[in-house]
Length: 128
Image (cartoon, rainbow, N blue to C red; front, side, top):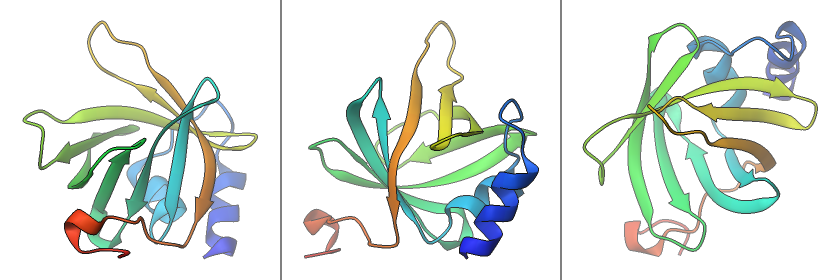
């Protein structure tokens, strides 16, 4: 897995958005912790078949899925939301960075850490 992640990161230049295949190769089987301007934002566990579990910082866990409706646009749909949230992911010096693609909204996240350990989600019966 580390070898495939290294190849994905090596092939993408810092200004290139990851496409769905590159994003999938980079994150599947991993839990990434995200930060916004140095402040913890949340964590996401990336499962097989483009399934995810999102946990906002200090919040509850929610199942979701992701798709790539157009190249470089990765959209997440969670069970607790009606509309997808779309992001552009790029390779940064310290890992991945994400730029929110919502109308009139700007939000940038950076990868704070990654691990193969699952999220602790007692409400979902996971990591208890």
